Length: 295
Image (cartoon, rainbow, N blue to C red; front, side, top):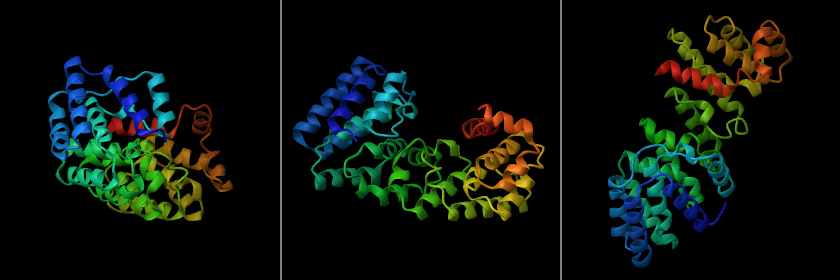
């Protein structure tokens, strides 16, 4: 991970391309005051007042910006951030980083933050100092039912994969399934796959089926690495669907799984297998199309 100063320089650069000059001047003045005084009151006021000067428009970044972000912090994806949360992150990282003082201020922010302030705080976790000490805060944040806040932690954020224990990781992924969030945007989910999560996903699917409801097609990604007789029985049911996205999800699970029986089942769907091999069907494309059907 790069130094805080390098990250601040990067944030300043992308803000300069996405915000008005008067807003940038305000941010510079507030940052200077915060750094020189170390005043938590000045910090809290600036963090709150930033919404008057910066918009919630999505950042406009070029490929060089995206590559630089990943070089600074592996997995950092600011293309999913808005201008306001970027400015708030700049303020956050500008506050003096003496551990006890910094945590006192940041904990107070977490306790009093509104929805959009929480969004900024949780999305900024992989850029913060003292990250190991923020795990409990992030895990607690995943209990929210507010999609904006949950997404800031769970989606396009390298922090959970790096720090969450398996049980908490599984709870977060299952919550994403329950809330119908786009699973393809959870980073490192394949490397953090585990048998317990596969079993939980299967139980969830059976509950949905018992209630006469369908199952989001991305769910089968969670069981794919662990295909056995019981999972293959479920996938046989999926492959009997008339829904194209369900078929695509089932086919991807069979294609990526190690089971020979799964490959045999997939051979009955040569068109789907060919589309997966050519890249026409991917988990990301299935996830995006599924989300589009819910809009």
